[in-house]
Length: 366
Image (cartoon, rainbow, N blue to C red; front, side, top):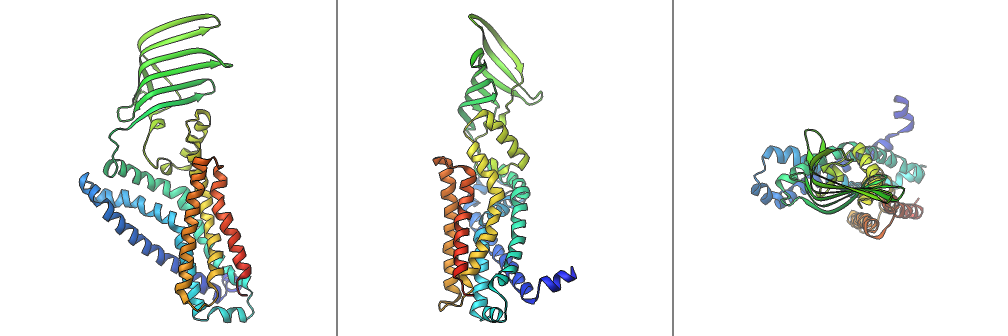
């Protein structure tokens, strides 16, 4: 480690890394304070209306709110931090002596990339492991104290539960765990072999199974049909009340195991949520790459001393970072509404801005 400190990282490297990470942390702290103040002013009426306890506001809602929004705004914060301290170094004529002393521009970028790697690792760990857990706290709090759903009913649900079985439920009440006008159809090589129709289907949380009430079973065997009626029976089906939840942001509160399991089920069921699930999964892995892309762009834009000073570079940086966020939203909407493949939609902003970053690096003063 001593050899690494002396040979690989010289004084300039440590100076840049320290400036980068300290500016990033300071900017992150400012955004945290501003975001919390604005959110309190917006949510205070809801907190008072639904009598949210202070302990739950602090340790559930804001314990989820702060990591979620800071991770989402991390590319913006990262870019602003790089622009700010690099433009300040250029304004104070610190970069010119470094490059004039024999250090190449590519070598000058190395400490930036080391610091960007630290931020990448932090973003990755938060996106994949920490934020899904904190989002569960936030979403759970919002369901009770911010946006309580009084009519938690999902209508006209079609679902394939296995290779040969299809389900339809006219209305499912998630509060009571009851579905109405239930239909189960079974097929064998494209031919219907059984059709079950029931007035109600109820989830038994003790037995972890479904109770079907007032049902009729139509069994088809070639040209023969048989009708069976009954008042109630218990059955196991590959679905749970959670499959009918209608809350917002439900996928952001799933860990990777839950998300992958939901994706596997969605491949069979085809309820129309596959794009949302894949976007959520891919974003967790791809979004942290923005640390490298925006760092390169920030260095290229702010390493030259300009007449407008720090303010001009900072203004350009803020405009480009907001443009980056807009690109992310456009790509997401094109995927959800326009049929764009989710993995392409997730990569598009980084690819476009990555190409722009390399172009700016080629034009940057050496």
